[in-house]
Length: 275
Image (cartoon, rainbow, N blue to C red):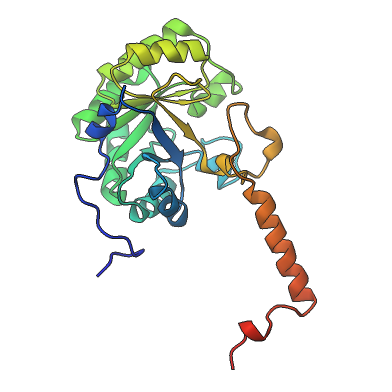
């Protein structure tokens, strides 16, 4: 009998795990995308995507909010559980939402444990550099794999005042080093200059995943809705985003055609009716 969703169980040898992820550094580029629901994750699982990030960016692209700060732990668990149920080979990483990264090792570890226990995800992602090293170390010590996140920190938007490219070379390099030393098996570099990302990638022994950090990172991540041209406000698409499809236009066209056919008595036709 197939599991829910009709997917065959994955051989344990095929599943991308945190140790296997780390071994990809220097061998090939790593592909990461966000996903927030079962059907999206199921599609990505068969498309050559290595890692699905269940990001707290769902606050922006799913909930329509201006920041990620209002996303709750329960919401992250709800979305992550759907994603994990949809995939077989792909590594699933879940953002630890605000304010658990900021409340210290005990709170972060408890929240991260809930995520893994209730979703069966593979790892959590924690924002911050040297100032989060003790938190990352505590979570890792609890047996929970961690991906770090340095550079622009969306959860710190109130402190930053606005989203801006990060150029503090010494601080960024120190942050990446601290995240690695604390036990993270990878690190996201967000919105930093390409030269700093290049240096950080060469110095780090763990894979770097860039988003707005140039081409020298060990891998790249984009938001699912941005990739597909599905975002609500495309006029504000960041410079680092590349749109590979225009699903918004496709969906609008389909919805308008449906509305026209209903109003004009075309749908449902005989072929769509029961006898």
